[in-house]
Image 1: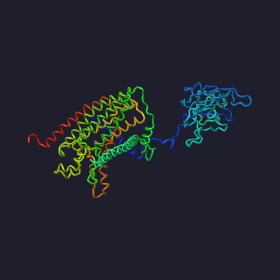
Image 2 (image 1 turned 180 degrees about the horizontal axis):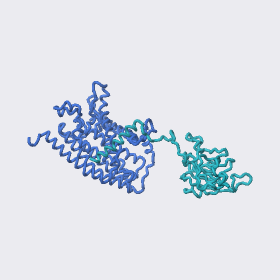
Image 3 (image 1 turned 30 degrees about the horizontal axis):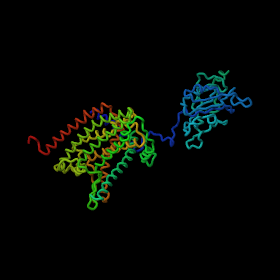
Image 4 (image 1 turned 45 degrees about the horizontal axis):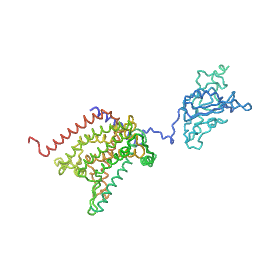
Length: 209
Length: 368
């Protein structure tokens, strides 16, 4: 009897798994808060707005990220830099910068669109809130401080791991540190958010010139 | 019948009810744990030690949930259906003796809801009643998925009830030969399975004394058919077309929520336990088993029959879970083909074989 044979074969498989499972072997479940799995290097987590090493904001309020966003979750309003103390090295800066994390699909297109690498993604993904308003991240939450640290939304949470905010997904460099668009078709990846502190590319000077 | 007798009857019924509720709490948890082990998962482990209070937590949650009533329901039937599901499920177990009768003073207390002399017939009637709950729930919900589930339930129940009844007939006929005439009382059928086959075949007592006199051994074909039929009757995988989640959302209970859904859930698990206990009673000797009276303290000997019945029942329930974790759902035509082309002819054939064998044993070979 073919069918009974097949059924018996199937029952043997589950029976074997049961005899192992009841002894706690071969369990594949990761008990999440107790044990954290290592995240891949290019994990797409919470965004962060970067600064230059001198403390200037990188965002120039161009709204390209908002335009690239397929979920339409980014709202940017640029404003002219105050003449006395400029916020960003360019003419304008991101006066309002909001991301609705409830709509964000974490595709990373904003990161790719950004001409100044102002917005990058980190490894933090624990962002649940009890309030819809809390899910809209503004400049206060997104922007890193002048020392390169990133504020955590829930610093007192037992799950809060500030290191996650300092690990960036590898993101594509579009411009040289000098700001010139010299990285067309060159893949260069940066593992941390924050001030641009990378070494120049081997032939960067030639291209920048 | 004086006041104490009535009190004993009430006590028996309440005890049976409480037993079923406790067993259901354990069974839901056990199923989730067993299936989790078979699928390399952990299963519920948050509520209580090993998650054993998970069912209690779920029950409490369902109790406090909103009971949504869709606009298009036939209200009367819609409200009645959950009760129609639960009541027969509990009534079935009332017939199953779950321990050895004991004597207090001059009164004999049977550990059984009620010892009807038509117990098996009553069980068949009640298991048919349970189908009405599914059909009415499906129809009165006023929605297509429950309706499809209800219609499937009708066809499935009719097909498999027949096989179940026919396999029971063979057992009843067989057990008629091992006692004084035929009986449909489950307590009586348990009594007739006491002892070993040495009583039947004294010639081979050396071997037969180790084989308990269960109906399983002479009626193994009936047992297989009965087991498959109760698997289908309780709408368990692989026969759970009634609530096929992938096709019918939740089947007949799609439109039920809160406590009304909990009633269907309760009925399903009470049915599983009752039917497995029934199978254990009919085929595996019920509460019969060694009690080592005299060697063990008296109270342990008194509890052991109940323990034996539960062990037998849980072996069958484990097989239920095992099959559920293993086999994919049957297609509808496969379900019907198995019922009408395999189980019912098989049961009929086995009925004839049993009849012939019994006749030969009683009247001798026709040519001698």
